[in-house]
Length: 218
Image 1 (cartoon, one colour):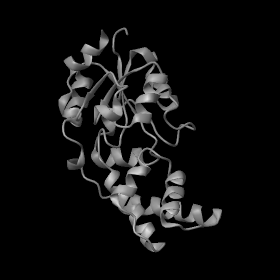
Image 2 (cartoon, rainbow, N blue to C red):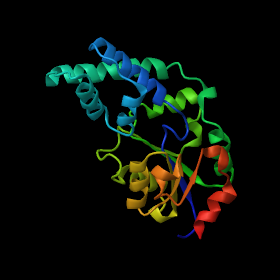
Image 3 (cartoon, rainbow, N blue to C red):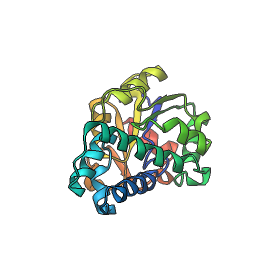
């Protein structure tokens, strides 16, 4: 790898933890449909699209819906979720994320977001972080889901850098695979068991700094 010129960040689980809000919104939907949806069940929805998540939820509850009803319930879940994120505060940024982003900015490293979330802009605005990102690639701009590298390749393109000059920060296996498929270096956030294909794995951005980033250039 040559010189690192850009960092691309996933949103959920890397910069902020919105998983709890997704879980509450799905649990409310399940309750309305007459069954319980546990945190253990929720593990199956990680990194999965909204409609596929609904299919898994219905399978857990043994519920059959028409296509129209599925769309209505998926929309309802998103409305519930949006009511939560519209109340988010900057103190919900994960430890170390803001200071690392600010450090990258001072060192002239370009920063992009690469998230499947269609609500990414709303979340960044609520967290008061939007000014740190030069490009925001979210669910409204991509057609292929991770592990397809589209979201990260578009990020590199918007930042005007080559894929091999980018480092991706991801907490999901599909995201790490997407980074690798895009010929980018990857920092996994979470456990080595799941994210073993990443170049390095850390617990969170509080363990990251500019010097550690440069060690990936070798």
